[in-house]
Image 1 (cartoon, rainbow, N blue to C red):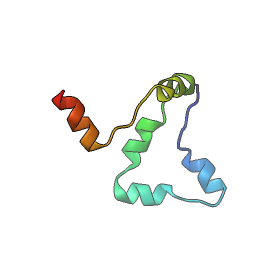
Image 2 (image 1 turned 90 degrees about the vertical axis):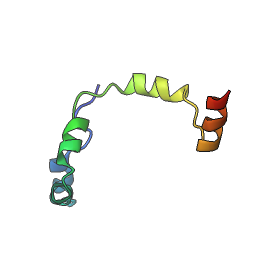
Image 3 (image 1 turned 45 degrees about the vertical axis):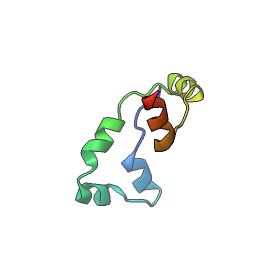
Image 4 (image 1 turned 120 degrees about the vertical axis):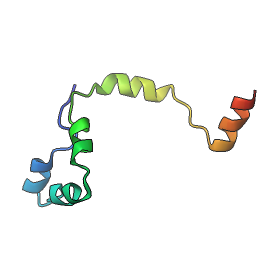
Length: 64
């Protein structure tokens, strides 16, 4: 489990002060949502079994 997927303080310490840019655009609430416990193993397990379809294939499947 990991927390702080986006760590603005760490980025700032490494010379990338991006918090102000995202704050200006109104995106900080989105990054607050991301900064919650994340369970990487279940995500990896899920991703291995996913399939990606383009819109045309999705429409064909829906029609069936």
